[in-house]
Each structure stands twice: as C-alpha cells, then as structure tokens.
Length: 61
Image 1 (cartoon, rainbow, N blue to C red):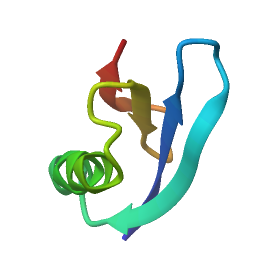
Image 2 (cartoon, one colour):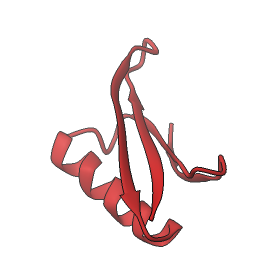
Image 3 (cartoon, rainbow, N blue to C red):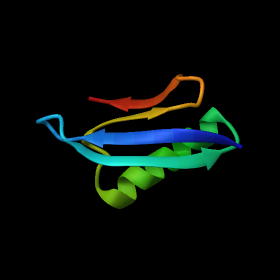
C-alpha cells in the first residue's frame, strides 16, 4: 500500500483539508480521493492528490 495526500484549499488559499490515505495504486487513489472530496462537499474546491513519489493524481482549480 502507498500513502497519498489529499489537500483542499479555499479561494483565499486557506487549507480546508489535509488528509492522508492508503491505496494500492494510483487509479484506486484517484477513486478514493474523489469519494472523500464528494463526502466532504469539496469536489468543486481547489484540490490536489499527490502520490508518495510526488506524482499529481488529482487536481482541480
């Protein structure tokens, strides 16, 4: 399992969420990240999900 970091920002740049979670691969991490964003109501906020090797998995501006 790899550890991924999901971060959400508001328009002023304030960090609204800084969460870590584990997934077996990048595709699973993308799916899990989108689920977490949807549940928290942050899908339309600026967000990013980064893999342990700094690969950008999800991004929305």
